[in-house]
Length: 522
Image (cartoon, rainbow, N blue to C red; front, side, top):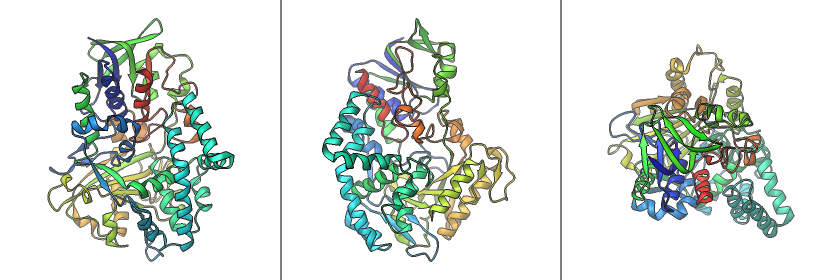
């Protein structure tokens, strides 16, 4: 069997790449080792029948706002893509009896400022100023994040930025890109609560409050949330996967699941196909595209054909691990700080910078955090189709954890493999939730706990339970992702390309690497 291109891995980047190429007339085959396409974007009934849980990614705002969706959104809509808007994207809960006890960001400047005013009238003006800065700066930042690295396109973006913003403006953007979230937020706001509200977004990646480069994501997420809310998938985040698979098939492409690739075939320095576990060989006339972790690509998949200088890419440093807890509920959490919190898509339990720093430091030291940061997702508030009438699902991301625990910072658990401690640690998480939402345990009808080991078992790209497929710290970002000399998705093997969260522009649901490579090739 011969195809123009073979994509190894049916994560959303691989599927986006395949869809774009197929619409340009390429014959494309996508091979996926798992029984279900989607990678880290999957929805399944893992607690009780009728309760649909987003196993990993829940927030689809990056996909909805991506250049890929701008070009192909109409096609995907014909194949079933549906979004549900969440006009209240996120909130943070602070310590009991603090003033304020919680803050949130809503779609709409005035609505958000009403929240900020409960913390600081001075910060209302600071937020307005930051909002105006975002209006000037955002087009250039998103153009930068949407350009190949390095490329003349990126040079043109930076030239345009300099022409529009001037040297002081470009310097401010550069400072933002290099700053830690704590340092940058202390320069913007006087209220610890407002700073904390934004800084929590750094922990969605692997940026503790004092890690350089951590300021960008909190800035972008807060400003975008205020403008557009959050986008969820109707029926589950896998709406993007199902629609891309259907669109690809409609354009003559194919997706094969349960198809594990043993080797990428290389002849005379050029990739020309793949060999499956069962021995089947499939030829690619124009490109082989690997949507996998570099450890797999430059290891087993290439073997002795891996370029001599590929070790640094293979050794991409992983970020801290993640646990996912999925709950089927009889009722929404009764938040102690106020029932208005039931109307937010995300509720962050990270009540102070010190709390975040402590959890981050403990995880990096190999200890189970005494109190981890929790991201609590409430998707059925906006999409009741995910659960039976009157019932709910709760999505809990536990950030951050050690891949291989060496100790327990609380001194209460006997540490062993995740398989032996995950339920006990999940109980600790529920104890924390119970403090903020009394009575939650009584509402739990079913639960599913996915440890870091479970994440990697389901998706080998999530090495050690790192949901980001590699740390996003500055030494592994821009032209250094996955390593210097491996940007622009080139591998050093002619005809072989590398995409996914381990490559520029990194993790998230924006399909950036898959789309930009496909655009490059066609």
